[in-house]
Image (cartoon, rainbow, N blue to C red; front, side, top):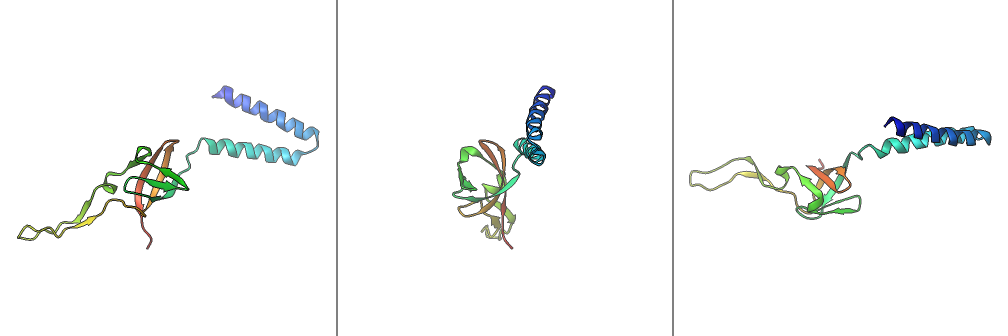
Length: 126
């Protein structure tokens, strides 16, 4: 890691020296900041994104179609979950359920790698 940092600093020094020799010091500073920002973004995850379910286990995030093989779900999003249990004396079930994800649902998505995304939660507008 230290070796890579030393190479990076050496390259910046060369870039900076060439710019200063041309009298273009402002661009050298801008280049330095631009390189630092790009390097910082490269190792940081994108964070949470908003996706739209295109099926019960498929999703679209910023124009990228993700299949079931690309996705990991919280269990309560793919199975019906009882929110209130109401069973009458005759045995009939009047319980209330949260339904599993379906086409058109908005979801919070987190990218974990180039080929793996987590579906964290269903999002709703109020």
